[in-house]
Amino acid sequence: MSKKLHRSLIKKMLGGVCGGLAEYFEIDVSLVRLIFVGIAMITALIPMVIFYLIAWIIIPVEPVQERKD
Image (cartoon, rainbow, N blue to C red):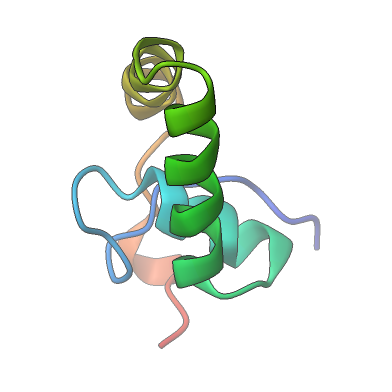
């Protein structure tokens, strides 16, 4: 079965994008959030906010029946 990128329903703070990326790459969600914030600070915040909003719109929500707690 292939892995699919979904926004997380469990590990979310805002839209679940970082939680979904962490689940997809099988790494800690805190590490993904720290990397996101670090890149946002380096790029003057606006490009990463735009990226997050686009990802929030494009990446589908995780189906309830496929969740693994």
